Amino acid sequence: MPLPVTAFVAAVCAIMLLITAIATIRARLRLKVAFGDGGDQTLIAATRAHGNLAEHAPIVILLLGLLELANAYHLALMAIGAVFLAGRIAHIFGMFAVHTPGAAPVSRQIGVVLTFLTIAVLGGWTLFLLATRN
Image (cartoon, rainbow, N blue to C red; front, side):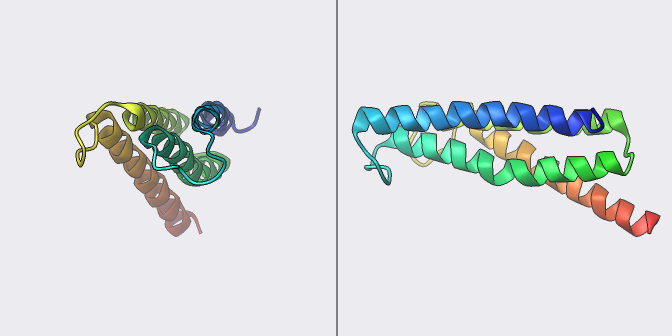
């Protein structure tokens, strides 16, 4: 496989997308809500856990692939991919965690920070390579 880090991160994200989609479907069936969230916090959490992953995973997968194709340092790409996946898992758990209204659970906060850090590092690294190799 020519892009092993990208392939691994994409495959794990695909599994997480399926898990969060199933959680959303189960909540919809339980509540008999075909559209929207019915004001139910569990359904809102499920749809946002799924949607947030669907929003952030594509750019990370794309940037990882571009960096792998540019022969960027493999071990660093593996570490960054692992940080991203850890952040996404933490975020998903945080979305379903019991919490005080108005205060995001710590695992959700960690997930957001790791996701944003990953995107910033990958974006910066890609721009750096563009500036120095072209």
